[in-house]
Image (cartoon, rainbow, N blue to C red; front, side):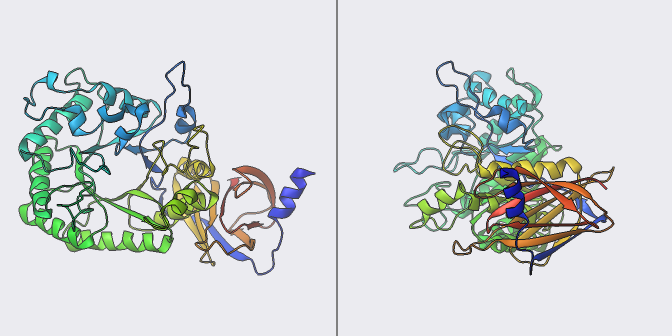
Length: 460
């Protein structure tokens, strides 16, 4: 009876429903890595404290994990992890001396990421500092020496230098959010305690050296926080100095999907305008945020809610069709920004299934055309070489006062009759399987204001 009630609720209210058209034979391109993240799994390696999410993390098949703010989690190694100041604690020492480096915790952390089937995206720099006094975010005393330290870190992880693990890390990002404190870098810096000019000089020296030393690796940055004018000047400087840029990384925290899409397009246009037409654009920090001051606590509560989960799924689908090459959700580190795992138990939450559903599309590989006639709906369809079709449909609304169930109809061109399986996540269900009848290639259903459903049509 319970199963019947679920199906009835899911199939109710079809009048004036939204229309979704899927064209399985119309290829768009590959499903992109919209499901990359910041940071790796929490590994339970103590007999006394056995919380962990390694298995749950692994089955998501996360493509990349960016190592930013990793040292704020004791499970990763705490303050002795990833940051340049943690790996090379005494800047006055010789960068050619293996004993000057402390790789122990970072080795263990990165190896746990790789063991989960995820590739490392290494952030070369420092974690954000919210403390009254700042320690490691200031311009290095010697830019070239900083680059040489990074050279040895890369050799450790890719070439086995100083008994390194040879992880084959492809992406190396220089610094994080150097523009965040542009207006008050003297009084209260968080990420770069210097001028914009100092950062431009620093980046040029470091990037030129690392790019020349490792021509086959992807050296990029700067993990732009928000200032597009700052980025324009940065890109012009790189072009003028003939400094390579293998990828451009940037951030946005929002509650409006259209604002994310707008910035995706502006960043692409900015790169193209400055002569970086082929350079990949990586949005490598993003999450649901309504506001950073009075609305901050509210925002954190929504990150872990069905609204945060639906927003995550909606952004993935929207950006799949936009000129951005990879998304990296912030954050899978145990923290208030982790919407995918409960912070007490580390068990999966609603947002976890946003990533689980996207991976089901990645497994099929090829995006095919799918359109919806409702601005609250976001749709992505994927098909494998043998004709297996899956459709991810998301309904996301910014307004908490929207409460009506929205009916929808999916028409799959060329399909016939049969049973398909929908996996619904909403305020009461988490990837709950619901069998639906397809007649003449048409499937009908209904969704709450914040929800997403993966419909598996099997082989057509």
